[in-house]
Image (cartoon, rainbow, N blue to C red):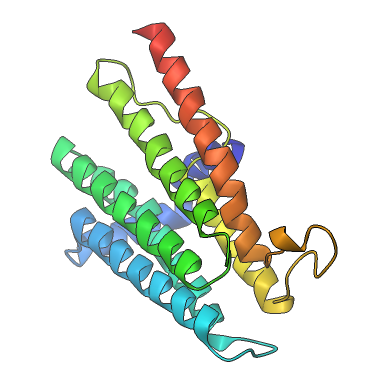
Length: 220
């Protein structure tokens, strides 16, 4: 969650990001269009994770590289849409609502792409638990706001953290696409870097959901 907070602050105050937002505003690009484009790149990322995982084994998988590029593009557009909305004075509840809905679809497409790509095969249940944790941690944050509290971003891992972890794991998977550990007593839990990313999400995202629940519960 530290990375999540730091990156949000950095994006909000970055001169380059503000210049990009000013340019987009000048050419008539709307924040909602950026949110939709972010979803499109997330869908492409999920598809390419799926195709990369089911492609013939290659020492260097260019399909996986494209998946990582699409995650980066999706994350960048998701970061800048709010800055653009504030730049043009169009930050409103409707845009915020749309952004959060599309973010959840983006999360599902990217993570399902990794799961269906076979990176946690044959332990599919780990993928299901991870997806539940991702969705519930986001739900707890916004549900707190729905009952009259401020939106909750706290906890071990936020959305920005997840995207950064996926990007790093994708790069590591490109360099070393083999299971860890490769053999031995723990071979039943032997996954590549992307597979271990899903395991991390299965644990930390559900812990984050509980942290946000109890934080809100104490303040209601």
